[in-house]
Image 1 (cartoon, helix red, strand yellow):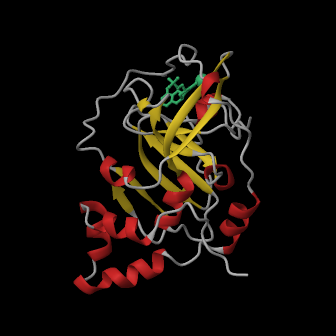
Image 2: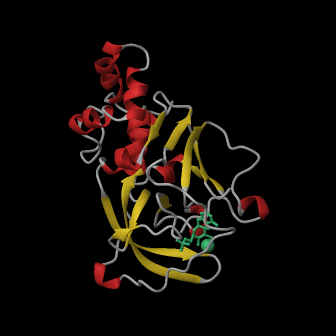
Length: 238
Ligand SMILES: Nc1nc2c(c(=O)[nH]1)N[C@H]1C(S)=C(S)[C@@H](COP(=O)(O)O)O[C@H]1N2
Ligand SMILES: [Mo]
């Protein structure tokens, strides 16, 4: 049995489209003009075996019908002010212990497969809301950057100074998205535009808004997350 990426990850055509764009084109072409095809080969190698095993065993949690969406129930919850981000200048940096570091524009990200889900967002402060999120699955970004087999944790840095860390299994769960749509509309600034985490398997405070950097690491750092470092639980599973 061969270990290949699941069907809905990026196609070779989409990757070739991406290669035309500054960040990734620079990255892939960075070591010489004819290296691009070699690097495409690398990117389409299977993920390392521990990740592949996770991908095969993870089951999606049940979703809600579109009719169950509660548009007024998702409260804005930010520890500080809303950051100013120019979406045309914005780049999402993906780095750490990976084979292919990347800087992706929103145009790059929106060329990747769009996944939509209707799930319940749960805040520890005692409110919840059924929300539709649309975006790219974090596992699709994982397939692009190819973390080393030592990777166990993922850090997320946000433009407002918020930071979070996740276990790799939760990060590559099929319903963990880097979302840029909410309830079928482009994500609003207050809800984390241009891009935020969204997942039905973690509490609200794990779901960083305004994410600017995703870093794959083999160890947890002394700082684990904005709320965790003040005593909140780190795993925060639902
Ligand atoms: N960058 C950033 N992300 C964040 C927060 C924050 O203060 N800053 N708050 C978290 C909390 S506690 C919750 S419940 C959700 C709320 O998301 P919303 O404001 O879109 O409803 O965002 C999470 N992500
Ligand atoms: Mo929250």
